[in-house]
Image (cartoon, rainbow, N blue to C red; front, top):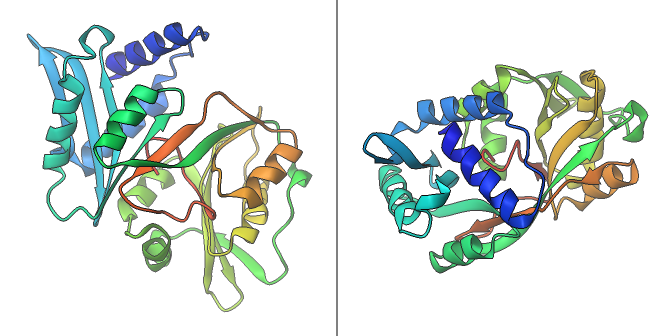
Length: 279
């Protein structure tokens, strides 16, 4: 899976005249391992005489399905293999899907058009934002907001309202190597949550009120020390945090992704995903 992924990405970089990205395999291996563990029935590959030439993964959470990965070796692209793997993954995800979605790079019009013909309309840009972020760049929590250690059971109803589904298995995955924070009011009502990684990655971050995102992200930044900069995936509608991050000196890195979906959602004005592969 790693080889297919990197071959496809590097081929696209060459076509676009971009420098090749470093092969950072460890996070991908964790992603693959998590999704193969939670969604084994909707993970499919195509092979030629035992050698993998394509793979796809559909993540199913309640009534929602998300195409986390679909990659084909460059020489096998354009032969219908990606479509066949996609259809197998979708069938494996089972019946009762109310909304299917995916992320695609904005500079891949062929993929975007293909997904649109399948009923997944382009809806929301997602930006990768990177750079140094001083502790004081974002506001502190309001005096009536408390931060606690995140317990997944505390945010079940919150996730259901924000995302449309529950995701305890994903929280368990994030908790393996990230520091989680739960934000509540003084009576214990959940206002949001977030995760921070020692590499500088922040996310996912969720807030009941979009205006709270800067303080929640600021709290997560101060919760974890890093040697270099921070990295966040910020949807375009999350203007309450996108503007402060850019004003603090972070920069949009590369081409944005586009969230394509059969219907509106999730509430991207108050939710920052972990990555383009695991919302």
